[in-house]
Length: 140
Image (tube, rainbow, N blue to C red; front, side):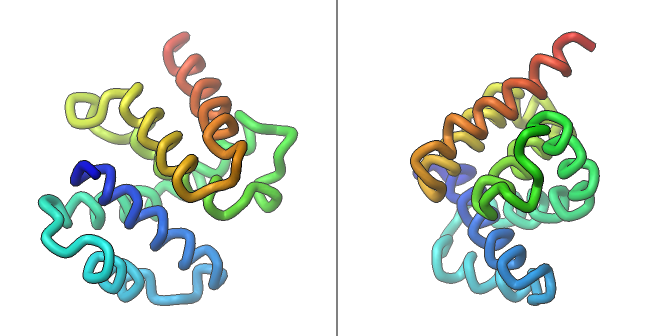
């Protein structure tokens, strides 16, 4: 597994756990534990921290985009895995440096982590939502 792909998986697992506990758990401790357990020797551990911080800093805006792009799916009814995969993908799609993470890479990576950790339709759902957002961005 590529370094950044592993980093995104660690971010997803950490955000999932944090979400599961109603954002009351210590996210820093969760990330530190997950980095130690799943990412020893990870080339870019700072990418995990940067991505997590970006998702947290923009969570309200990201959630609003999800609500607008998937109106038939209330945010609370989207599984925690899918919701956090969307947040990661949207953060990279909307806020990351395009030279570092091209739009199609952001979308593909979110789809892959959803397929790996979500349900049988997670990849299709993530693809649909991120594809909708990408088309809106392209129009602008």
